[in-house]
Every structure is written in C-alpha cells, then in structure tokens.
Length: 399
Image (cartoon, rainbow, N blue to C red; front, side, top):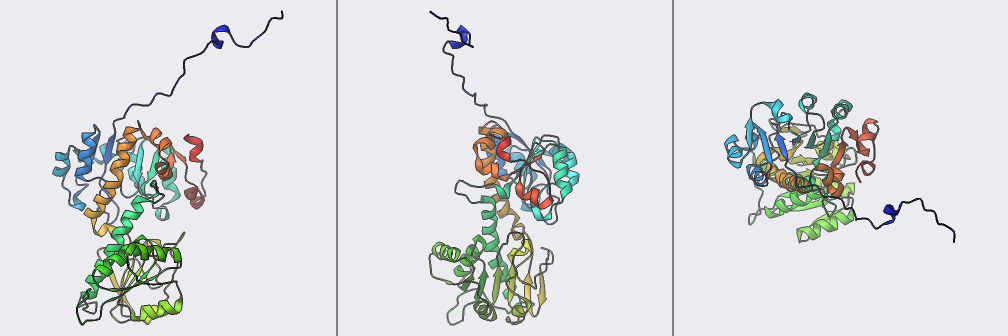
C-alpha cells in the first residue's frame, strides 16, 4: 500500500477551534469644543443637554470658556451638565476628538495633535489647497457633517439647516415688508377684505418647502417655480394642499415677479447657483418688493444679488430691497445649535458604542460618506478633483 504524503502535519489536520473577531469594548470619548472664531459664527456644536447625555454615558467633554455664549448658553450651564471648562484654546485643541461648526483655521490646525479626529463642516468652496495639506501633515481623520448620510439617503445636517433657512426667509421678509423705511408697510397676513401678500418661491427643495409652509401659515398667496416636475409634485404632497406650481418658463416667472411682494431664491447648482432672474426682471418688480436670496452661499440666483452680512443685511437696487446674507441659520444661533447638537449626539454615542471611529466607519456607511480625510490620506473624490490632489478610495482603507 502506497504511503500518502500531505503538506500538513498531524496536528494541523485535527479540527481547530473557530476564531471569531473579538468586538472592541465600548470606548470612552474625550471631546473638545473650541470657541468659534469665524466671521459671524455664533453657533455651538453641543448644547448643555447633549453634554449631559454624553457625560452620563461615561465620556468627557472639554469646552473652551465662552464657546456657547453666542447661542446664549453660559459656561455655568455646561459646567452643571458635567463639562470641564478651560480658557486655554491650546488645551481644548489637544483633545483626541474636536467638534466645530466651521472648519478649523490654519492657526487652529497647528494646535491640533497628530492623529486627532475633527468633525466639522467642510465648506469646499471657501477652502484652499493649503488647508488639506495641513491636515495631511498632521495625519488627521476629518469628517464633514454636511456629507453624513442617513439610512434613507438624506443628509440630516443639510436638511435641518435648510428647514431653518426656509422658515427664516419668510420671517425676515415679513419684517422687511412691514418696515416703513424700506418696505411697503404691508403685513404678512390674510386680513378680511385685504388682498393677501404675493410670494414667489424659486426652487422646490427643502428651503422652498419650509418657506412655502411658513408663508401659507401667515396667509400669503404662494407661487412655486422649479424645473423638476417631480419636486413640484412632492412639494404639493408635503404641503397637503394645492398651490400654484410651474416650471421655469421665463414668461410665467416674469408675470409672477411683476405681481409679487416677496421673491425667495432657493436654487442650488452643482458648483454655482444658476442665475434665473436677470436684472431686467428685477427692474420690473414692484417698488418696495423684497428679494431674499437664500442661495447666495452658492453665488445667488438673482443677477442683482451681492453678498451682505448680518450686521448690514439689506441694500436697495432698482427700488427693490435685497437681503443676501450667506448662512441665514446663524441669525438664529440657539435654534441652529440645538438642531446641530441633535445630529451630533447620536453619532458620538454610536462611535463610542462601536469601540471607536475605526469600527464606526466600518459599520456605518452614512458616517463613512462624510469622511474626507483618514489618517492624513484624502478620501474624497470631489475634493481631489476640485484642488487637483491625489486621493485613495475609502473602501480600500476601511473594510
């Protein structure tokens, strides 16, 4: 009988114990919240209630003194919630996890420890190549909260802030319209025997929907324009009532603009908002009418729009009042802060539950979608294309 040869030893051929991956135990987070230094930024990432929730789960929060003052949250409220308060910016930036609303400046990046995690906005259009090179040098992991995706495919941060911007646009318009110095002295309301205010909304996205809700609630006549029939159908369904909707036909749009008291621009483009209302159309509007260009962050959809600030928000052109402030939600810092905090808190608790950012990114596709830097390696294709940088596919780094 011929002897059989095997490359395996007798021990190797015996059944072995199955080796399973050991789940990392729940991690403890140490979160730093620095004071916002960007122009007109008064929001804060976590409210005292959110801090209290994190502390009760065994995490630590270090807050720079005065970080919540812009949103009317005192240091005392944070201290009572369990946060540590420090007046030293460098100490706050030395935390392993840093939460910010605006992206950190180059000076702030210098204070951050290598291999730290930053969760903030990205604001691609206002960034420079140097910013990304600075992140790479420090081997930082960076997540942009506006790109974090929900289970249903929506972007919760963008939606929340769009809801605020939409509602705010109508409230701001009602103030300007009633102002005797600028506006027509009209009241935003459906008073018996008085013709209602005419509102034109350009764009049927989230901003347009919430602007329409607020305007209808105040008794205005609303006309919505968008090039997508699907969006117009959705907005009708979401509003639960029939409103005037039309595609962007210049004749219909001009007719509506001539009659309207308020025009709200809420159209986003890929790289820039398309200009849908030219100067000739604005000249034909009523004297004292109000234009609120919400899409000014992306360049604006009115040809006459020029960027203004929260301190000097209004200017007149062709007897029409223009309000073109970027970042409208910052006008309501407390509401915006609570809104952002509600998005951050569950994700932070989940990161800890999964045993750290590495595991959380592996299991949560939505969080992975927000990742644009992983240990100093650029993982965002859009950033790489915009600044002509090299990038690596995140799925090849985390699997």
